[in-house]
Length: 120
Image (cartoon, rainbow, N blue to C red; front, side):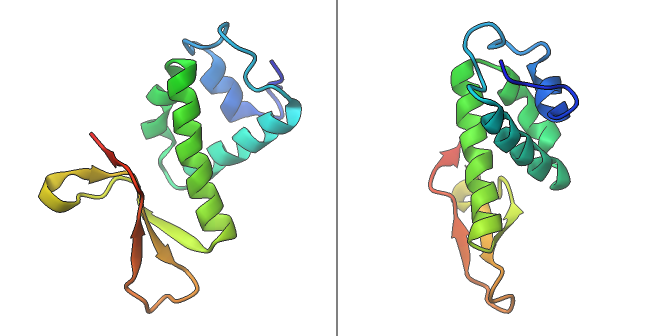
């Protein structure tokens, strides 16, 4: 395991008590620990870290799915200029969607992009 408590404080705190801690070699390299720490800093800055914590501490499968969701949101906001405006907005019929984005390049635009998979 390549998690340094000083360099990766959020990732280190998630690791403590996680179900997957002894199940695999996550993260596989120090560079990946750096990436995951940046993703955690991103959701923490958005005020969403506490909501993700239970899923991040579950099985390796659930951890990986959750980091995939966070990584995609990080990419969209930082590389495609699509701001995450709500992580689980109510959709048609009260269903919850995974995330909504708004194009930051056209702030006057009301165009939004919805994540592809509804959550339950």
